[in-house]
Amino acid sequence: MELVPSPQNIRQILTLDTPLIDVRAPIEFYQGSMPSAYNLPLMNDEERAAVGTCYKQHGSEKAVALGHQLVKGDIRDNRLAAWREACHHFPQGYICCARGGMRSHIVQQWLKDIGIDYPLIIGGYKALRQTTIDAINNLSQRPITLIGGCTGSGKTTLVRDLANGINLEGIARHRGSSFGRTLEEQFRQATFENHLAIAMLKKADQQTHWILEDEGRAIGANSIPDPLRIQMEKATIAVVEDPFERRIERLKEEYFDRMTHDFLITYGDEKGWAAYSEYLHHGLSAIRKRLGSQRAVELTNLLDNALAEQKTNGNTEAHFAWLCPLLIEYYDPMYRYQLSKKEDRIVFKGTYEEVMQWLISC
Image (cartoon, rainbow, N blue to C red; front, side):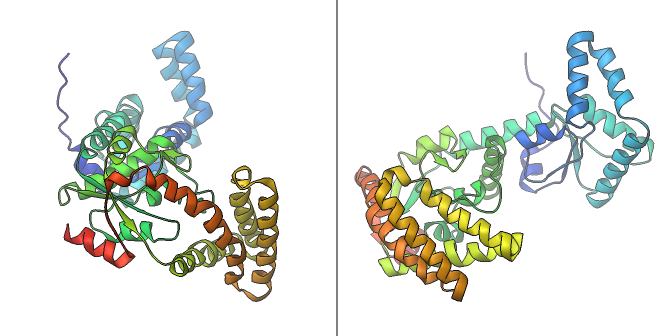
């Protein structure tokens, strides 16, 4: 069957961060959503499950009747009030449900009944999602240069500062190592891909060549989509080679100074310190087997001493006692081994500034 072209420019809607009033149930939204979407569901998870069961057992008509029975009175009024407020707050937005079907039409009609004429996404989330899938498939085919370098080389900062850089770790909310988690929960895979696609779409008209950090197959819980990963495995690589001292200063600022601040601001002094301590212990524990049990115990003791000193006088340099051997004995050898297998793809090596200048001039 021939597809009828949509009169809506879905790509433009996404790249302009057009607000989307997503009326799907919370579980659907959690499993996959767009960056500019706000979840104001027609039915909650329990209501949706009940209607779904009714549909399977008794058909569409009974299921619709049950839905109206579940969403009535104060429940209906409260949800309608939330949609009305969102429409006033986002006058240029759209209503969105799973496929642009019954749920978005019901919400649209209820709003119309109170004098609000608000458009919906034709095809719903499915149409939006297909646009992001197509975008990754197509835009991944453009030339790519990866930025490599040992831990602490400033690769993420470099990517973030380049006009054609796509910050995969920023989008994934994870820094890609055993110590990589941030205070933000990672997205589910579909949502991660949607954010990635839109980041690429926003730059697609001005940039024809992507700069990405040299990553593995996954960044924390998020996998790099196959079309992009396949191109990354063939991409040329520019390697940052900064002095060890400069690298540990970057790591001090990012993993100790900033993380301490973020944990304390988020959770308060007592709970924040406990969460920060647990974060560092969890990162070290995650690579315990690779370090060997005895060495892991030794480094954990050094970590505990560093935490005690930091708590007493605020000195985060105390962590160098375990960080430096961890880099020298584990992370640096591991990355250099991985890089040795890509030697034929390396096209430039230099300091952070030299790599930055080379990438800008390419």
